[in-house]
Image (cartoon, rainbow, N blue to C red; front, side, top):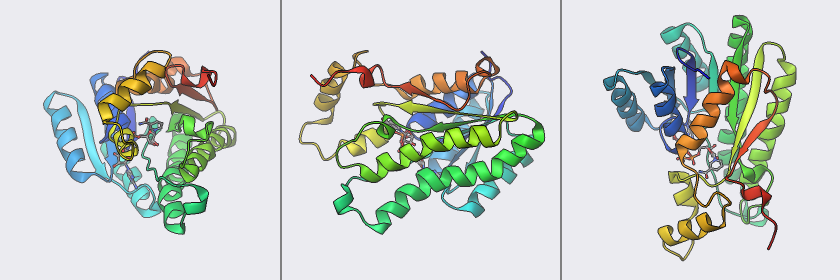
Length: 256
Ligand SMILES: NC(=O)c1ccc[n+]([C@@H]2O[C@H](COP(=O)([O-])OP(=O)(O)OC[C@H]3O[C@@H](n4cnc5c(N)ncnc54)[C@H](O)[C@@H]3O)[C@@H](O)[C@H]2O)c1
């Protein structure tokens, strides 16, 4: 399995899973375009990776804006002349049942999680078709399959991505491979933020959760990065239109 020399855009590449991907891909010799709306973290991460002799650049983007995504694609092409893979990972969450939800919640979550993926695909698929090949890997979530309490809009946004993976793969078959990763409980700032409302201290809560996961630990960003590296590599060239569940076995648990 090799991603060496591949030009890979990682959205949300400055925190959590995306940060893990940017670092791991760069260490594997890829040419990484780190893209997110965290300019300070992105500039520091790219400098850190460059300092270690890796090929990494930061491009600020708001994936919910078509104009901003177009500028990201232009910059990636200016830097490298091609885009081998898009790791479309930027995401946001909101707590709340449907009975609590507001249009602002809908726009925030769907704007990034769903529209972001549509804008990225709209502007990157033509580049990949022109090249004759390319891979898109979208980060969904087990939330696409499980009714997480008080996360209705987030769950709906991730279920939409599972459908989008299949549609993109069939519409652009033969040139663009489209896959997904579907993480379970990964130790990231987003997980910590979503656990903030619980009464238990975070460490205790994580230890309880880890005891219930079949592999007995939370996932780390690098666990997801390694799976994505395989999925976007040429060794995975027969894998298309599906997402890989990466949850340490959680979804297999019976309800007792
Ligand atoms: N952590 C988990 O347990 C878990 C589980 C399943 C799925 N996921 C998904 O994995 C992805 C990464 O999550 P994480 O846990 O690493 O979260 P995180 O909050 O640590 O990182 C999210 C990243 O997305 C970026 N981002 C947010 N809005 C953006 C926008 N409008 N434009 C550009 N970048 C934007 C942020 O700046 C950040 O870099 C998300 O799509 C999330 O839904 C996470």
